[in-house]
Amino acid sequence: LLVKGEWRPLYEWRDEKAPWVDQECSNWFSCTYPAARFTSQLFTCRIIGDERHHILNNEYVIRTGHGVDKQTTTELISSKARLLELIETVFGVRLEETEGIDRYL
Image (tube, rainbow, N blue to C red; front, side):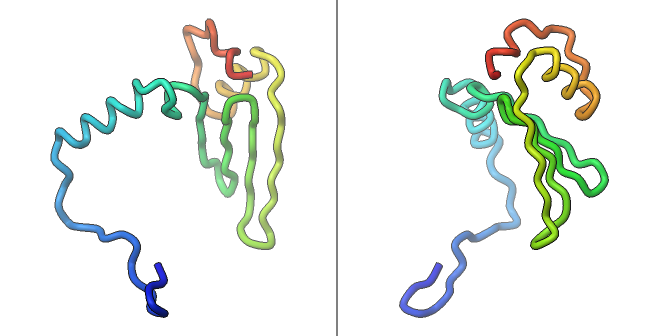
């Protein structure tokens, strides 16, 4: 943060743990609030070697490299079968219940 021509820290980190009640409340909010990311979107990610893979709703992205050497590959997921294939083969998760997962496509 630039204040009167001088750079100052934007955040301050402390070596003390947050009270359990704050952690529990924040976790509950992010998992139950209707507009929260974890209740309104499908998101998964995984790092494999030098690749970063993620799915956000109907978009599968692979990122490799850094800076000017960075490459991004994007695939729009158009079927439930493809979504389940990616989740199992790339992310290593076999879902037992898949009803409704295609609402994100």
